[in-house]
Structure formats: C-alpha cells, structure tokens
Length: 390
Ligand SMILES: Cc1ncc(COP(=O)(O)O)c(C=O)c1O
Image 1: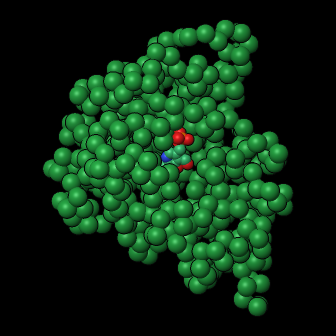
Image 2: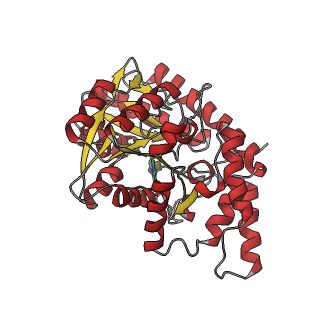
Image 3: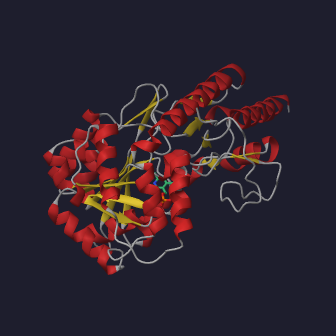
C-alpha cells in the first residue's frame, strides 16, 4: 500500500502550483499532484543519475515495449512500435500538429469550454479557433453534434483538436461519441488530433477509448498525443508520446520532428521515466492512486452537497480536476476569484481561463492529501457562508 494521505509542503520549492505570494493560500489549481511519483520511476531516475553517463542515446527497445504493452494491458488497444513518435510535451506536440497539418489562416475546431493554452497555441500559429460549445444539462456535459457538423461545414477546419478525457469537464467520451466525431471529421476532411493526457485516472467504471482503437477510419485520420506525466506526476520531465497509425500523417509529423532535430536524441531522463511509468512495475501505484482520488472525489461531492449547496459539482469521469458551477452565487469573475483566493485563501484555476463558457465556474485540483482537501473545503464553506451574512 502506498501512502497518499501525508501532506507534502511544496511551498518555496519553486513548484508552479504552489507559487502564490501569500503563504496562507492552499494551492489547488495547476494540474499536478502533491504526491511523490511511483517508486519504480524514482528508482529508474536514480539508476540513470548514478550511472554518470548522460550522452546521446537511442530510445531502447524496452521503451517501445512499455508503450505498446501499456496500451494493450490497460485499454485493449493494439499499437505498433513504429507508430510511436514523441515531442517534448503535450502542448509542443499540439503546436507541431497544427503547424504540420494546417496552413496559416486555416481554422482549428475545439470543444468549449477549452483550456486557455489551446487558444494561445492556435493564435500564435496564425490559425483561427472555432469552438463547438458543449451542452450542460443536469450536471452532465454533452457534445452538440449538430453544431459540430455545422462548424465543419461552415469553417472547413483542417484540424479538430480533441481533449479526451476532457479538461475541464472531466468527460471521458464514449466509443459511440468518438465514432460519430471520427465519421464527421473524415467526411469533412479534418485531421483529428486527440490530446489524451488525462486518460490514466478514471472514475465510477468509466472507460477510456484511445482514438486509435476505434478502427481503420479513425486510424486513417487521427494523431494521438499522450503522456504518463499527469498520472505519475512527472510533468517536469516534459515529454509526450505521439502515436500515428497512418503512414502519410506519420511521415509528415516525423519530418516536423526532424526539422527540430527531435528525431536525433531525446532527454534520457524523460525516456527512463516513461519506460518505467508504462511498465507493469507501476500498475499497482496507479491503481492505488486512482482509488485514493476516487475517495477524494466522493468526499468533495458529499461535502459540497451537504455544506455548500450554492456550488454544483460537475462530477468528472476522469482525472483529478473538478469543474465547479458557481453561477448560483451570482458573482462576476473578479469577485468570485476574490472570494476563493482572498477570503477563503484557496487558489483554483479560474473559470474564465476556459473562454466565455467558463465564466461562473472554477476548477479545483483534488490531487492532494485528503486533509488538504478537507481544509480547503472548510475554508470555502466559511467564505461562502460569510457572503450570505453580509
Ligand atoms: C489537456 C491538457 N493538455 C496538455 C497539458 C500540458 O501538457 P504538457 O505539460 O506536457 O505540455 C495539460 C496541462 O494541464 C492539459 O490539461
């Protein structure tokens, strides 16, 4: 049994999540975990550090075996070793896909709410973002397929950039939803780029369906970007695995990698960590993490329902980021932010970072010791109640 319950003080360590100037603030924003990574990953890094040999290396066969083994073992999805490419991070891979599969001025279609880096990347690449707002009904976000097709028809985007499981709504799209998205993208000639970085923690029996496991039509048009980073808390090793089944799409991405000399050598610490993360040696740690996070999620849902009913939790199907509907409080974004940050002293990821559809919502990261979550919720409860007393 691994112990996730011991709070680790990350203040003053340079952690981006814990970089608040006010030390009293509990930081529950940025998507990393307040847990030390799996022991097998730590050991792989220690062994490499201890070797003293940090020159250029080819990625070992064990790395490819670990990636393909992971997809078979956890998702029942067959991946060929030659489909496995890489980039130094998920957003970098997203930008490379945009540069590779579209031209300046082209449109890129994304679901809304969408995380602000996506909008920035599309904008910096000189492309135009078109959004397909999801529909929130009874605490559940659904894809508006009629709007999706209309956007494909009207704007002819070269790329549909999908985040599955979705940040911030936590939706893990069903195989049926994904098939419809694939059919529509294929019909309208859009490359489907799937960011699946949040696929390794799932709740309540929900499943993750890797886009390349959905048959030949999906394999013809899809690029799958993922990483073990979010689940194993190794984001600082900045690495993404890029899986492409179609030869044409793969050659184009490989050429882009060559253009940055990324085909030559890769950070050996990242590769060592990914090889360990995707190997069976870490499975138990990840399963126990999932169970601990499920406990945190239940605690959060029960606490808010019982003590802060003005907030509505959008129960996520995956990951450790929880989208909270605060619209009942009736506060504009800056006052909502002040309520959490200045009165409750809890730092969150602010809803307006997710575009207009995020206004009135906030995102809380439950990837922390239960005691920290309990303290944050008690503070939020007091601040919201004080609001009513004004
Ligand atoms: C959906 C999604 N994609 C990508 C990233 C960032 O990945 P990376 O740090 O590898 O660029 C995040 C970080 O929160 C994310 O939520």
